[in-house]
Length: 316
Image (cartoon, rainbow, N blue to C red; front, side):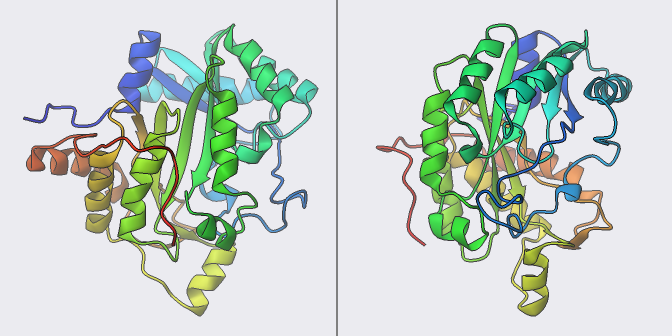
């Protein structure tokens, strides 16, 4: 029989690691992205409007320490959190000179309530000197690198103007692995051209990566993006609430059981979101509905997990 925790959740992953209720505090370090500044491409990924997933209270005009102070006060009051991680969330947070990166990271760590760093980034923004810096910091505190995979399929990555391929993901994770750095990742399901078969196969592929935790997002079409223009010109299907709950449950059954689940949906601001219009109350319900679905099935994360020779994906 499935237990009351049918999947390995991130809340307990952090609590077990730190021995206390631990939450991330979002930070905008003032970085940019090689897919925006022209280094890799221009215009950014087709789905991306950074304002849709960065908390509105963040301002890069504030110092990192001031941002953390505000975030710590808020998270402590809201969640009764006891430990905190500085979450560099906006854009690509390993994309700058090593000296500037270290300055920003150490400013965050100078706050007495910060126990470590979580760095959202891209697979192509992890050169060896940056990884060496992270390895050094990881000897002093908790350091996690959260890589946006988005899709394991190169055809999709090209279509969304990602600017790198899946081989870059496997390369970056192999170079991070074994150096005291915790590894997380982010996936988007529902990107045009992919199918249910490909999303389920993604569970097999990412299970072969050295991941500790994973975020799952359903595709959201938001204003100010190339994907929004594509949607208005030629609308494509997006998930209904129930379809997403079922897919997330199917995916978890096939995922390696020790990978912690940090998110099961995204939640763009209403003023930016075009589709799907589930209603704001539906997003907190996703976690509960997935849990209930797995319990009703008498199943749990990893029950259908099978090992494979390596992280290669189906062709589209």
